[in-house]
Image (tube, rainbow, N blue to C red; front, side, top):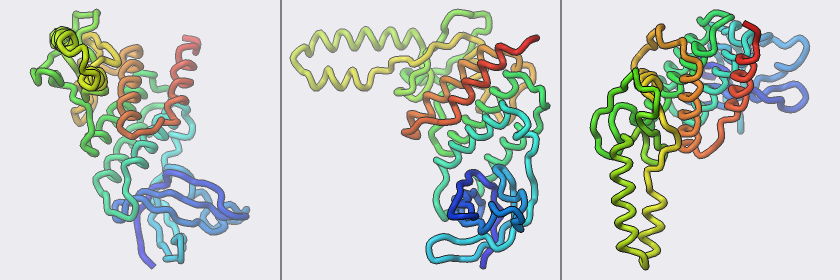
Length: 289
């Protein structure tokens, strides 16, 4: 037998009374293990197999799947399950972590980072504002992407590599965000690039392969950001969010959508929890004030 520290990320029924648990560990990365009779009325595991419960496990190797022999709870996050927004944000981050985790490979940094952002969401008050929840979600997404080496470029133009600073008095679009290019692009540089591309197309009207390649790699912005949105996006790379920025609901909604599109593009799959975030945003806007 062997011992691991693990947080439960996913659970599904197995057989008559077992559960198949997907757990993230610092010692061995992602593991899928069986919690025998955990669905039985008098299970010895009690609530230890709940989602986002942190346990110290004793695992017994099996032929195809290892089995949980003993579980001791180290921490749980009851506040998440009592709040739709915080629970959905946690599930969102868990989906990204699941896609980044490697089977049976030590990943202490991923484990620690995911746990840190889960704890930040847990510490938010039960009546946390939409901006607070989305702000912490967005920073969690960004930090996970950065750990995986695929964070978007948010400080320099992807076309010119020049630093871009937000103008907070500018309400009109200031920069574009291009998932294809990997981050923000200056509108001036984008205009110059489009002019060069048009000239190139005029000179290569019969070169269909060249025209197709130009279209495929054109840095077309998926979204446009004003000064405030750019400032918030750039802040995500910092260790912590500034409390004064967690008041702009509309800006955080836009940033979550940008990061969602970018993350789904790089993961090659949809984030299912994102639809629940849509519901959370909609319900927050219809609540009486």
